[in-house]
Image (cartoon, rainbow, N blue to C red):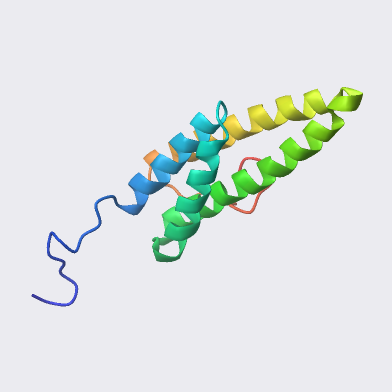
Length: 122
């Protein structure tokens, strides 16, 4: 057996694309329960170093979605006192939904995220 061949026992159970898809699904579920976003954050952070170039952009995009989204939620929660916070929270919800769906569609087409460092939609 050569160095590039892997036995069935050495291959991962889920490939990088499946992990990235699972993280997107966790982010979508997190729109109802925030706990799954933290699970997705940990998975993306741990899987990113070994991922191929395309899925690495997805993992970076997913990590930034959680971190930036947390900033939106904190600022929005604080500003609910003056009612503008509700607009910020509504924006966060829509922003998170669009980022997750757009990323999932790009992953399905085997495309990378064009700008994973973006604050908007990549």
